[in-house]
Length: 107
Image (cartoon, rainbow, N blue to C red; front, side, top):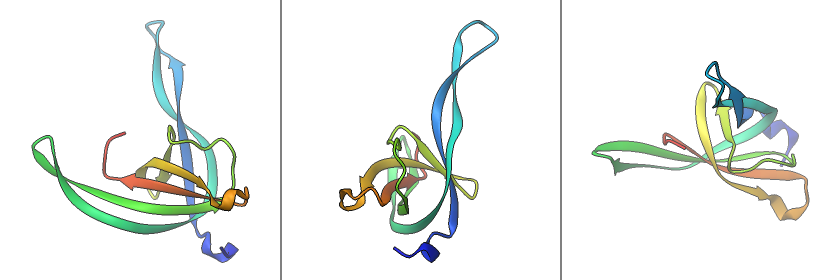
């Protein structure tokens, strides 16, 4: 990976419980990390879900290694939301991460 390949600014978010006015709590998405990344689409398809067609687009996102990134997080890029389906530590070298993400579906 060349540094010049990391041209897309992404934001990783995590769900965080916050107190609400009724004394309980609600889950909200909180920004955890902003990073430069490379985003490559890998596949796209339409599938029938709950009585309608829904688009599913998958991407491979490469960024510098960061600890603590999990599939419980989501990625935001250009106002679009991506669910993180897998986090791969390339060659287990702690140099780069590959995120397999999916756009167009609910968490």
